[in-house]
Image 1: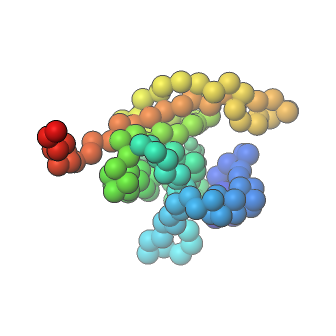
Image 2 (image 1 turned 30 degrees about the vertical axis):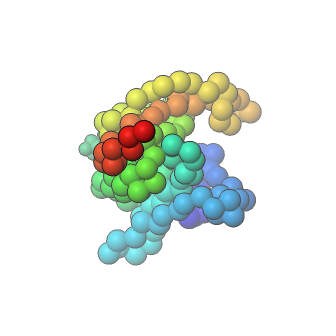
Amino acid sequence: MLEVERAAYEFPWSRGNFVDSLHAGYAAWLLHDEHPGLAGYAIAMAGVDEVHLLNLTVAPPRQREGHARWMLEALVAWCRLKAAPMLWLEVRTSNARARTLYGRFGFREIGTRRAYYPAAQGRREDAVVMSLAIDLPAGPPAPRR
Ligand SMILES: CC(C)(COP(=O)(O)OP(=O)(O)OC[C@H]1O[C@@H](n2cnc3c(N)ncnc32)[C@H](O)[C@@H]1OP(=O)(O)O)[C@@H](O)C(=O)NCCC(=O)NCCS
């Protein structure tokens, strides 16, 4: 994961970020297919009534093959299992690829976090906050009082 992370990002997660996420009990998925090597991964945190997607990465040689969309579909299925009506994430304002992916998938931009990410020359970059409403299957009717 670290190898893919370092190839995919200018400011990658550290080994400690991954270790802390796993120790905290966040959910992590590794994507493998018939090709050798890791195709991608996702890390998410389930909260009350929401799932926060913390990391979604596809190995650079495997990008643009539909893997990110597939992982997002799997995450939506996981949100339904958790009965979470919202999936949300932060993305760099400059990350046009990811913003296009999320926008086409149905995410909406709901806010901005100022100076959220490190950037070149010691600067900081804003994050766009995006959310996706999850259709949950209708539950049993509320009991009558
Ligand atoms: C962003 C990222 C996850 C997309 O993964 P991917 O597997 O290449 O994406 P997919 O093949 O599933 O593409 C799905 C859609 O995303 C959009 N998209 C993906 N890559 C794109 C690109 N290079 N340019 C424009 N749109 C792009 C398109 O709408 C695409 O649909 P289309 O191919 O039918 O046009 C991948 O580029 C990546 O890992 N980037 C580095 C890490 C990163 O930025 N992660 C997101 C952090 S929030």
